[in-house]
Length: 71
Length: 482
Image 1 (spheres, rainbow over the protein chains, first blue to last red):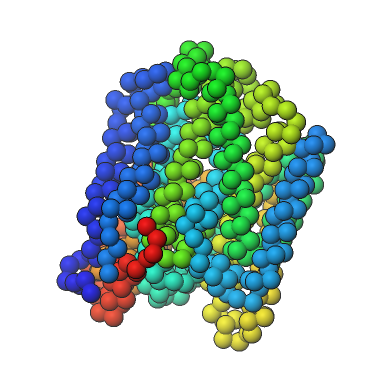
Image 2: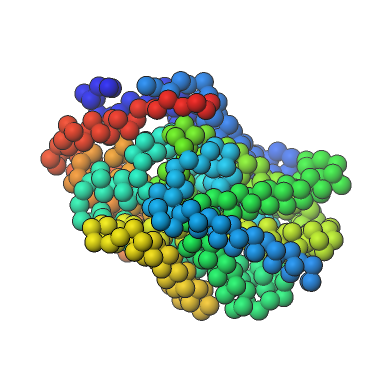
């Protein structure tokens, strides 16, 4: 049984990293710079959103497959 | 339109047939009816989750929005929903599957035992989802009217009768099987169309280059759209982990790991479909039909110009499938909020399993008929509220659910306060009574988190037994699947 002393129930390190990466990626995508730069006719913001859509579930799946279930 | 109508009739008959077949298994068992016996495998659940999220808006609406508002704005809206699934798979999937009940209300009532939670959560679900169902029904009626030439009212009645039939008698098993059929149909139609138009153009980048040369606004994000894009992104990212029809899918999974995998695999399929629609079909539509008065017609115009009648019939079936695969899941979640969450406690003490089965079926019909009544002449308030319904659920349920699962100091006072403050402040911010210059969802989630923190820090500490029960939900069960 995991310890109950801390304020939060423990989360696997890989899962913490995924959450942090996704939140930072999303926040960075909304910075003003991404709206002014264009790539292949579309604002960089659009490409970043497209990348987020594809990469976020793939990254999470990769972390799940690497991690072993905690028993 | 004869070929199209025959194909659509065949598709509707298949849906009802699946419901009738499933009814032999589910009518006398709560587990079978609400959560398909908790034995849905990863691949089937993947397709069912994808189809549940992909509403009429994911085919017709996404392309209309990209055509009129530009591709970056559109992707911001849909990326919020997609990123919500990795969040859900990490924050709630394994824990709620281990909890092993039927609804999100079951968890919140267990974690924060209070009459306020027991009554307010299902009421929020019913209010938000009824509006959502009405909007989906309107989409079905408009689509059938535009593509099959059937009067709006007739199309509405037929499509409602079909999906209420198979949901009411077939429960979650019928929804799962029909969603798999509907999901496959959607993927084939959208991705197949995208491949065909890219094949003719040479490459997607060439398509995009040509389209943005003719219409530069297609690739730009209008500055006035930033605030709403941020708000919508946050609403969906935080709603997905707690939205009832997705949470019920978690309960149907055979184990926690399968639930986690299927949530993410579903989003890979969903993202590919949305990107195919927005990055390939919309540029073709913009080049071929640059001045459409109704942007939502862009996909249908491309299909009409590129493909023969048989393909058009399949496309109509796919659009109806998109509408129905979401509406059926919403209807079951709405029914469960009434028949299981609100009435269940009273009925289970006094009624036989057969009576409970009758109540489940009757509830689905009552909700379906009410939604049909409103869809035939939609009240103005209901139509406007639909866009905010998901936000209301997110504002009320996100903080109590996540804190209830992860914060050891979360207690009953904090849970009740964060639910009431979150939903209440969202309603006030949405109506303009509470205006601090931020999107309503940002205001309400912050207020909800503060209420939870205040309750946890100043209220009575949670019992050790509760902490141990929540800790047990975080432990992964052995799984044969990887």
